[in-house]
Length: 359
Image (cartoon, rainbow, N blue to C red; front, side, top):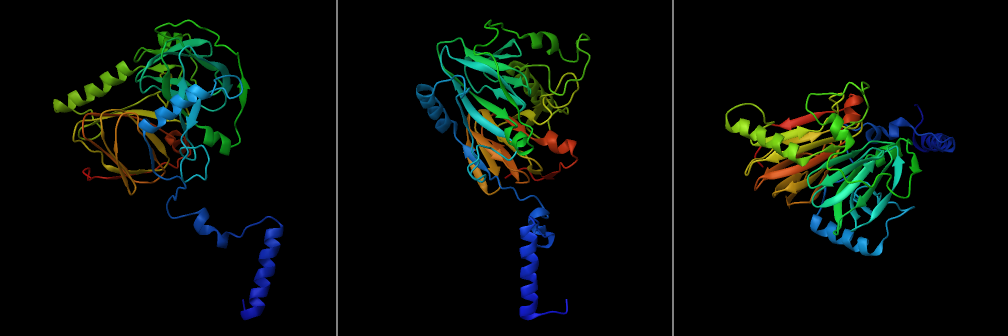
């Protein structure tokens, strides 16, 4: 420490050269990047318009086949802040998948957890571990990791839906596996109710024939008719002066594993929200990222410096610790999925709420 000037600079250069040769990095030059005072996400807030996504998916439907190898006709949301990676956030993958009339997507399985959310349409069945599950508007369909699954469209019209997976998280952790399955779906029947629903879709009732606690929900379908009733009931209770909503004019439900009460999958949280016309959420910051899709109605979503008018089908990404809030113009229904279960299990989740709700 007694050295100064050229002698000190020469010795420092020698030290740093030796560190680099041995593939080392000194903390004192990296602390601010490695341990910032608050999260500094590389992902940025972004809006994808359904009016832009759907025509591209339709064009792909005319030009790109569905079959072994490529497997799915899915177009992923690529966050502009993530250097061209096909990720919505560092942990979440989201895409619009398109299946043409009478088309069939072959079966496969992967270690990544997956779900499908239907913004519109009907006529498609997803077959999960041999169980045919009907897909219809507003339905949430689950494909937990390492479950064989394929899709077939029995109707005369195409169908597009939102896919969500934890692909980026699995890729970053080097835990990804993939395996081809049957070239055709293993059950081409089209029941109105899947076998999983016949066992698990009764509130508060659990089949004793399956006593274990599965890490992901054994219920393959969460139907819109039930979600709609639950959200409407919360707002009805508010109108009666009773508790039920999360904040004024804001009803919300979380999809859970009926065997455990936990999230539907260990890496993904799924929620539905409904806001009365004119209602607004509080301003929030949360550790972890999420993707929102408007299911019905119109309003505004504010994320960081951005404020977007949104309508049915539009998708918005909220990176970690970026403030967000929502204002409803009409009655506004929203689907949300995020990575909160990961950070809650690691005891790293935080939420900060600003009480003032009006933008």
